[in-house]
Amino acid sequence: MSLEPPSVLPATKPYRSLREGKRVLYALCATSFMSTLMYSSLAPFFSELERDLNTSTPALGQVVTVRLLLSATLALIAGPIADRYGYRRLIVLGLLALSVSFLTVAMAQTYLMLLVTGIPGGIAGGTLSGLPIALVAQTFAGEARLKAMSYTVAAFSSSTILGIPILTSASAWIGWRGVFLACGLVALFGTVAIFRALPDDRTIDTGARISFRSVLTEYKPLLADSEMMRLYGATFLRSIGWLGFLTYFGAFLADEVGYSTRQIGLVYMVSGVGYLIGSLVAGRRRGAASIAVFAAVMTLFTGLAVLLSMTMAAHPWLVVLGVCGVTISSSFAWVMFTALLSGMTPVGQGTTMSLNSTIVSIGSASGGIVGGIMIAAAGYTVLAFGLAIALIGSALLILQGARRKGHA
Image 1 (cartoon, rainbow, N blue to C red):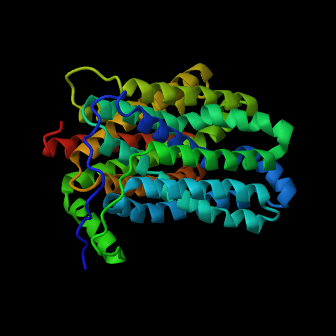
Image 2 (cartoon, rainbow, N blue to C red; image 1 turned 180 degrees about the horizontal axis):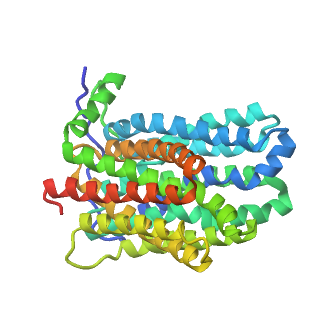
C-alpha cells in the first residue's frame, strides 16, 4: 500500500537570501560539523584506545566500518520519512543519537562496548549524512540555495581543520575519555539550540502509516529516471576516485615521498583548508556556464590533479600542489553537483540526498577495495591512473545526464 503524503505545517516560502534564513543555515552548518566530527574523532586516539581497551588498529577500524554500513542502510529509510513527515524531528533524532555515541565512547571499558557505539553512530550517520543538504535545498531558492549549500559543505570539512586539533589539544588536559564526554555534552546542548532554530515542519497525520513497501515506492521515480541514474553513477565514480585518494594518499606520502607523520599531518591540514576554500568559493560562482558544466569541469580537474599528486613523488612540491588542486576542485565540484541534483530530482529532497549519501558510502568502500588491489598488484602509479579514470568518467556522466534534461 502506498502512502498519500501528509500536509506539511506550516506552509512557508523558500528563503531568497541567506539573511532571511540565517538561523536555519547556522543550525544546519552546526549539524554538518558535528556529524563529520563523529566519524573523524576516533582515528586521532587510536593509540590510546589500543592501550586502554587492549585492542588493535584493524579492530578499531571496524568500529568506523559498522557506523558506515548502518549509515548507508538507514539513510535509505530516513530520506523518504523526512520528505513525508518533516525534517526537524529526524535531524533532532540523529543529533540525540550522535550525543549518545560520543557519551558511550567515553564510558567504554572494553572493545565490545566500543563496537556497540557503532549503533547510535550509525543512526546518527544515517539521518545526518544527507538531510542537512536536503533541507538546504528545501529551505532556500535561487542564488541563496547555492550559497547555503556551499556553507553547509564547508561545515562538513571544517571539523577536520578545526575540530580535530581542538580535540587532540584538549586530550592533553582531560584525556580521551574527557574529550568524548565533552563532545557528548556539547552535542546535547547543541541539539536543543538546533531544534529551536529549525522550521517546525510537522505534518498533519492522515492516518497513513509508514511501511517498508511505501519507502521503496519513493525511490521508483528516481530509478525510472535515466538522467538521474546517470548522476548517481557520477556520484559512485566520484566516490571511488575521491575517497580512494583520501584512503591511500597518506600511505603514498610515507612510502613514496618519504614524509614523516608530522609532515603528513601538515599536508592534510593544508588540503583541508583547500577543501574549505573551494566550498566557500563555489557559492559565489559567477559566469554564463551552467552548474552542470562547472561540476563536470571541476570533477575532470580533480582527476588530473590526482594524477599529478600521485605520480610526482620525486618532486614533493608538485605533490603538495597536486593535493591542493584535488581538494579545491573536488569541493567546488561537490557543491555544484549537489545543487544540480536538487534541481533535477523528480522526488523529495530528503529521498534524493539520502540515496546520494548511500551511494557515496558504497563508492567509498569500493574505492578502498579496488585501490588496495591496485597497490598490491602494480603500485601507486597504477592506482593514480585508476582513480583519475574514475573521476573523468564521473565528469562525463554529469554532462550526459544534465544535457538530456536541458541543464547543460
